[in-house]
Length: 169
Length: 431
Image 1: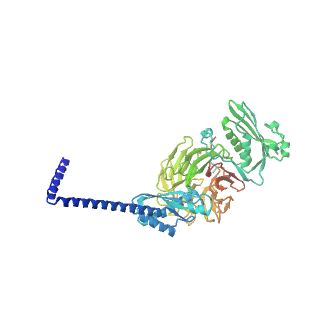
Image 2: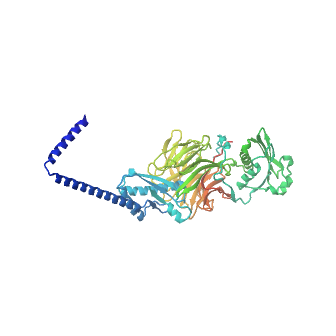
Image 3: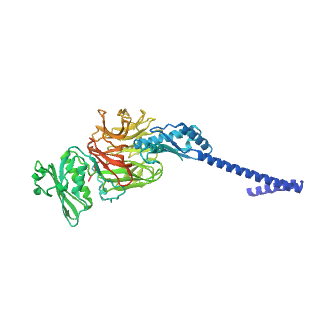
């Protein structure tokens, strides 16, 4: 029933357009159609190029974004460098709706359960900074692994520095 | 607390051993004046040879306590197996204070042991042990003999028949590991894998009945507290809160589990009633509160908090909620475990440099450092209160180490594979 009504309406319109176009020159009509097609193609190409450029810029921006943030021993304070990195992350994250996971880690010094809490405190520090800078709270999940998943082995300052981290995923 | 847990876990005895990270003992320090004893090789009458040298295991047990200096077999003038064969004057001349002799014989396919302990200077038998076990339970027999001999000579209940839980991690890639929860005899023998997974596994804690284990696993990619039943080998997830779910600790009566949850913002101590699964919040502070452990009377908990700026040990009385700071010496004191007599706590302590295991007298507040290794953590006290196991590093590898509560005896239990940590010494187990 509805389909039939729509079809009738469509053909009525088509007839009216046909009647109207009869009043113009055939060659003008062809040229106009061609111009319109060219215009549309150009617009499409431009849009495509723009999208590609945007994607490229996004990829470049993403590549430049830091995903790992480091901390001092028994501290969850964000350094100036980390805050700058997080500003860029926040700006980028505001352009999307994706969910993120912040994984907090600690070095091996001190006890395991205390380090679990410390890893969470670090991840929360990063989460709170992102939230203050406009990233919606519901998009962020905070997980602490404590000292259970070190990326650098060895009991030395260099390894400890690499392991005291928050990873954004 | 001289609580005796008399619930059976006979299935443990029957489980087969696997050699994933078998521990071997290296004694690093003994007492200055250990008691000289001689454990004479036991005689054996049976159809086939025995799989274990029972007297040798008894000798190792007594040696490992640090309180005894067993005589070398090659120094023994003869090998008596019964009272009539013992020449006290010979043993006295070789300065042996106590002598253990024994006979093993096959009876209806089982092994019957008749063991006797002699006071060499008193020239008399002071203990006889008669026990019949399956041929597969020779190590249990040996540890039983060690327990009885140790108790007779020291007045303290032996803990050689107890078990050990620990965690191993083997690296798979950057930041990626295979985690295992392992169970073995307290001397590291008869090890078996209880759980193996690619997500972190930590904080194993024995139930007071010795039949269940609480632990923390990330198998859902988030932390959760689980209970593992040793007989059924089934595990049950008991928490699923946002944030940290950690540090399970059983109440002395086994009905409650203290734990750490950060669901309300920051890590706080909670107590879960296991029958109803009902939670009671114990601490509420924006700082880190973690690592709860029960006092033997079940009325209060000790825990770690950094509310004063650095991690320190606090005590909370459950009925009143009254909180009190216990440690003031050192910049890092954490993961306290209370001695069975309730008078002292064992904890991780950092003075100025390394992390060590220390004993603090609760009344007096003074701290005695027990270990010289670095990065020491996860102390776990024997049920008789004489020794403790802890995790440390040795040549770049995580190992388990032991020290007596008086600091006089030390030994390593290095693993053959992977890093091992988080030892949990079982309560006394029923035979």
